[in-house]
Image (tube, rainbow, N blue to C red; front, top):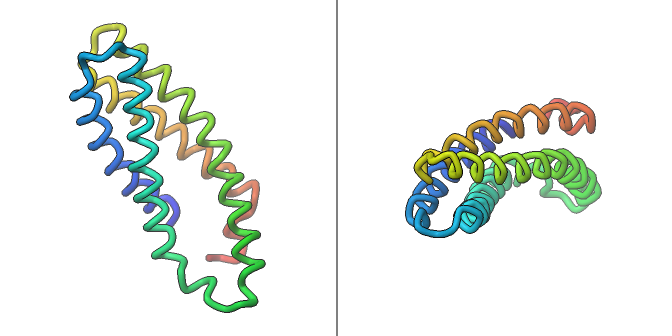
Length: 138
């Protein structure tokens, strides 16, 4: 479920980010890259957060489940946090590099996001296994 939600959120953010990169193609390369990354994050986390909530809202209904929710949130934030640092650095530098070697802004955005997302998914899956987020089969 986690990967499905990430892939749906990724698809939405890649489309919107490419459009924004194209619209801002006249901006300085570093501004285009920075604004595109910000839009990427807003779209990605809005979609991912909504889907994750919809998939897991029944899991934490009881009052006694608040500690379980807190514990799971810490694991999720840890897993995603490590991957986000890797993703942010890699995505920004790759898009900036591709724009500087004369890729169209939207192509640079799509290419950098695909490469960064593949690495992000690898890091998230390794982190989830290390934190044992789904050790109970959920």
